[in-house]
Image (cartoon, rainbow, N blue to C red; front, side, top):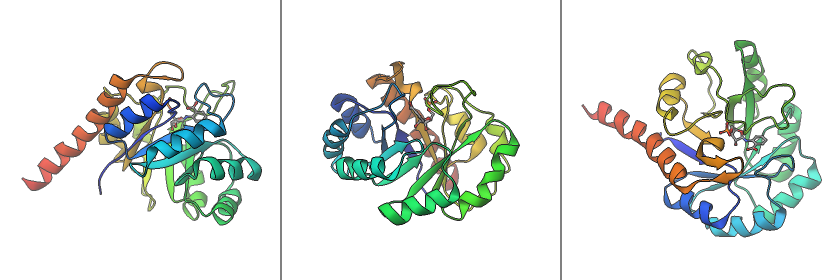
Length: 223
Ligand SMILES: O=C(O)c1ccccc1N[C@@H]1O[C@H](COP(=O)(O)O)[C@@H](O)[C@H]1O
């Protein structure tokens, strides 16, 4: 299966176009006011229209209530929800049933004990996103540009598709993919010149570097 590349935290028409033109499979929009990448519903509506099915639209939320998700559905009509808070298995089931969209559950990772939650989520999530666990005093649970120890996923036996994120950038994405064997990668800080400010050249370099790992593995398999 081909590698999924997600560029998250897009907030301008210009950088969204750069990500789409460079071949992002998923474009993420953050609906979480404490984040420097938070966008309004109106911006979500506008950016969502611009996507025109060139990539999957991902709505990132953190422990959002039904009213918030309803508003996001109306504005962005996301293809998938990225649930980046402490949403329970029951809440995932509830969201899927109420909103009829697949869900990608972010699982914070710092030690192997953090993987214990997988058996519960695997029964209901459509995809798992492994992200670095944020420090206790962080203002947000992700988007901090910090990696986790990818070797914790080395012996992972998960039937669901999964992606990795946390501190990825053009120079380490190949190694992250090699170690984790993930089917996708997600980046925010690693393609920014400052928190919330996406950099077109960094977006292009990230997508190029991720795709290069795919080309290399295809080359190996035809030999
Ligand atoms: O981007 C944010 O501000 C954010 C806020 C709240 C939860 C998650 C957030 N971002 C996600 O975190 C990971 C890692 O990001 P980074 O590349 O280390 O900056 C990624 O999945 C973002 O989508």
